[in-house]
Length: 400
Image 1 (tube, rainbow, N blue to C red):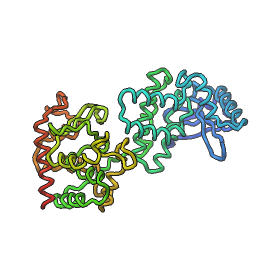
Image 2: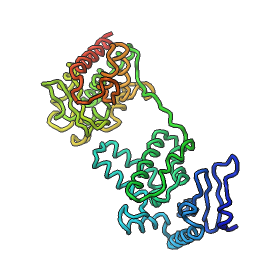
Image 3: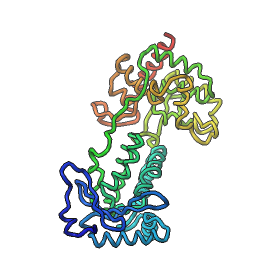
Image 4: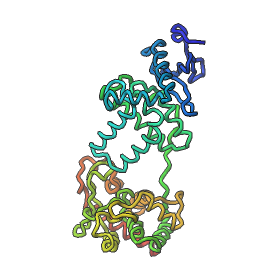
């Protein structure tokens, strides 16, 4: 039965229901959820069931929704996907411009701005991957002004069903940032829809980083690393990581120009740091020896630990974890990131260093008295002494 304005105004969610659909004709539907009433058009294209967002009621009336449906069906009759037709029309009006800008166009502009503002390359690549694989195929061609909580929820459901909890969290946060950017730049007037999804998606549970904390087992791991039979580049990288306990990505992208043997420091620029601030890692005698050992092999190039296929790129993201697997340590035992948790625990509990000093060395935000002002050389002498003591302790338990 065709819908009427009177029926639409009177329609409400039954008690205990979170979502209902009222059908008109030609695939036009009105979806009713606690946050409002939304127009959808269901259709099949190339054998798959798809759905097109047509706006929010009452801003888009029944008559207007039917006009949009007819336009979409006309596109279907020519063999075109209505989503792509909307996308082409939007881009013809100007890339990312106007009130009908697509989600994909605004997302592209948002990401480009973040890159200009100094977004790390690795983060940009991961962000682009989530957009390309998950968000844009689902809502990329939709007008960013028309995407509502129901439409966004439909886009996020496949990530939830695939069991990718971390990706789901990042995609939701990312979508919220894009919607707020659209609002700030005049392409959207309604609020960011992501807060309305509270409780509708699985709760993101934090899984502690896998690491080894028993001193005897750490000693066994260090001995196993000493006997690593892979390439010299990987052997030196996996040997250095426990001494520096930096983020694995920072180690992979370490450059020779950042190493100062005379001051025993590794100086990282802000562009490589998660907190976007320059950072110094004091180098212990043991760390300097490992670097001196790899210098004859890679010292003429840019990266300390280049990729196996080319010296123009750093070591690949999975190499360090793969090395641990070759040594017989599973992902539930330790990961390359787990050396940070290992050092954080024993520096405080075993070697009795100040938590704030440790947090400074981990390049975390410090909110206590030691964190009121920031300078890359903050507590550098105390941190240098701590890093040397840590390397000495690793040698002690390796010998034990």
